[in-house]
Amino acid sequence: MTNIDSTVKRCRVSVIIKALNEEKRIVSAIQTALAAVDEVGGEVILADSCSSDRTIELASKFPIKIFQLANPQERCCGVGPQLGYQHSIGDFVYILDGDMEMLPGFLPAALAFMDENPQVAGVGGRVVEMNTTSLEYLSRVERGLAHMQAGEVDRLDMGGLYRRSAVQETKYFSNRNLHSYEEFDLAVRLRAKGWALWRVNMDAVKHHGHDAPPYDLLIRRWRSQYICGLGELLRAAWGQPHLRIALQGVRELRIYVSVLVWWFALLLIFGVAIKEITALLLLGLLALLPFSVMAWRKRSVSKAIFSVVSWCFNAAGLVRGLLSVPKDTTIRIASVKILSPNNH
Image 1 (cartoon, one colour):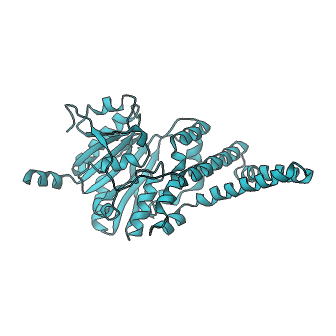
Image 2 (cartoon, rainbow, N blue to C red; image 1 turned 90 degrees about the horizontal axis):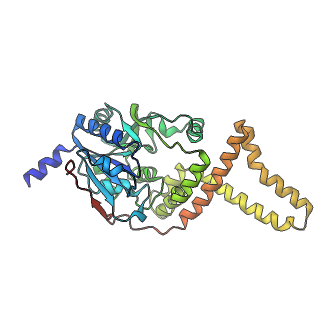
Image 3 (cartoon, rainbow, N blue to C red; image 1 turned 60 degrees about the vertical axis):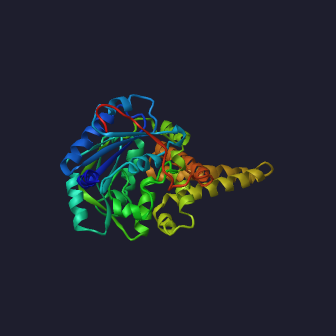
């Protein structure tokens, strides 16, 4: 018992790397995570969602814990963090994507900040984007997301360090049903309990992101159900104390609901347009309206078309997510421990 207690005491931070087919970046993610925990004391856990490439082979060369989903059909963004969390022992937990690299100095600074501010449940830092040419990245820059700026924030997208005692108050770390919005879900559950989240003014991670063309990425996200995350989030929050906070934080919900109303209006007018030439003209004008407005706002036809198409995908994903049937978030996720000479 003494040995176990002393081990737990020495493990201050558990870095959980969630991965699916990340052979291109996984070595850098693991190496930088190991260097980061060497600064403060801790462990690195790879939570793998049944990768079919060399992710596990490459990861097995390092002194880390590796756990893999027992059922590949459970793959989603929310299942990886929870899988790693259920096998972690650190007093603090950091979540890292497999295409990220941790930067030196952040963990000591974040821990010092949390020691000085006991009301803070999670701390993030600046995310250094390495892929600065993608249409998705440029869109984020144009929106100027407030939660990516230094100071108190409403969520810690792109990774953060969390206090285990705060997470335990919410019963689980990550909702295993969510195909996206998992960090926002954790944030609203923590804030509903009175905890604060903070982003400090220093670089925390490098993020390489996706190289896929924007429309290919939309299709990929539809197939992977990533695009269903908002609907799944709202379904999970329905009737819960954090529902109001969740609704206040998802401004994009108004856009997607507006798209659904737009579709409904087009269908109604289409029914009349078969017989009325005036209705046919109205149908054409209404169909072109969002494209015209966005082209005027963005001064770009290509950006306007992508924006409206993206909204349509997300609106359909919202409905799909709302209709999903969730699993119990408190049940332990079935997993397999990957053994090798270098992990324990």
